[in-house]
Length: 107
Ligand SMILES: [Zn+2]
Image (tube, rainbow, N blue to C red; front, side):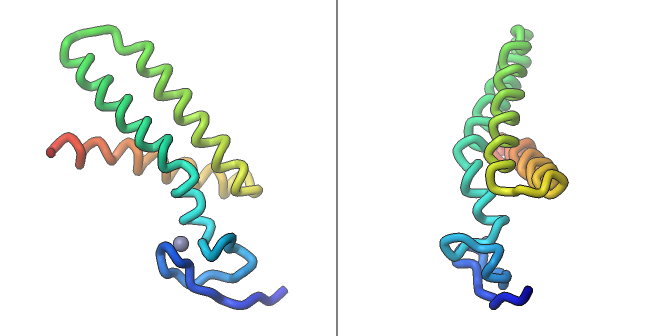
């Protein structure tokens, strides 16, 4: 099956038109779909660090973080039909979400 290559309007990458929706590649669609959850994740993560530095109980926040990560997984699965690919996307998003706190922390 052949398809035309088009430029993703978010990242500018050239992708087969069959992999795009609304002019966006899958990468960008995944990123956009979990953007709010990623912020929520970062917020909870910072909260947990703050609590931890006060020796407070962080177990509940840990559960909230796990729930957000779960929801990210669900949203990605809705966009990515291939299970292995969906897992890869989730891993990447989580790495980004967890890594984000370092840049935010320094501000
Ligand atoms: Zn893109």
